[in-house]
Image (cartoon, rainbow, N blue to C red):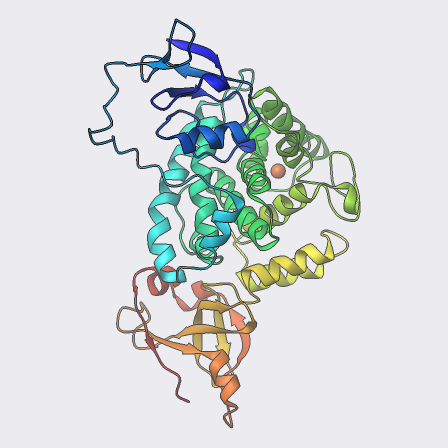
Length: 429
Ligand SMILES: [Fe+2]
């Protein structure tokens, strides 16, 4: 039975059904949980809740005599018995996230997070396919999975954003939502957003285009230019997204603003309100950058994708008009001047794929040299650290002189960067 109790009646062994608080505002990975220790109770009380819902069929109940002690239930274990495994990691806080910062290499993190990303993508697809415009949506379940992605961008700041650009997992509509979410979390981490703000940005990014579901598909996927009427129709989608989110439980104003303002532009030429510069909430500006970066670097029905470095160059050129100049500079610093997966041309005539970025030396990443006799990159790829070359001050250090599209050379960066977990480092030349 679901029962509302005073938070001071909470005891070890009770099963929490609902904290009565938005997931965005508490640090727990899941709302529904068994209280396993006094420490759990202490953490819950810290969040200033007055009442809480418990499920007495899954855990202890309050004593009807009113002394507040839980009554034993059939599902309860005595202290001597082993406790059930819950597979719940520690609750997230901004501090525990900081402790994760850059503890894992790009390759190891990509290997670890690929499954998480694929599952998240599948859940998002199922979720979005069940959304009905007139019915309230429940974000709580999908939202809590977001914490796994947040942890990933802390373990390695480059891995997840690299993964989403190296692999094509699914059709654009779903991958775009999740990719914007990943890129916004990556930039949010770079900007030192605290956990609660990261969660708001992640949810806002995931559902920024939700309102497009109410617009005819033939307009959304039209290969040619839009008529004025069609464009006016498209321009309704931020309002529609915001409306849907407003109807959902426990969604903060910040999340709603992310959806409502993700097409505003720094110079005031965006929509729906034509807001300028700092009038646009920071979280919405972060999503806007992630949205444009992912759209430009993805194949669309009406144009081919643009390479990662060139996209950043174009976006940087649009600073102070399209985007806040400081924010777009931070995007470049955050993804790298040559993001992972970029095909770079060297002064020696060789080509390489960017495999790792040195955050202190963005123009000299680690690259995998392309072996012309092995274009698929199956045999012992050699990694060259351009930063250490430039430090050695050799007579003719290798350096990047340009970029090119991997497709033009029949090179699949994913084959080089995702299938070979270990590389031989080569610093000669
Ligand atoms: Fe949009």
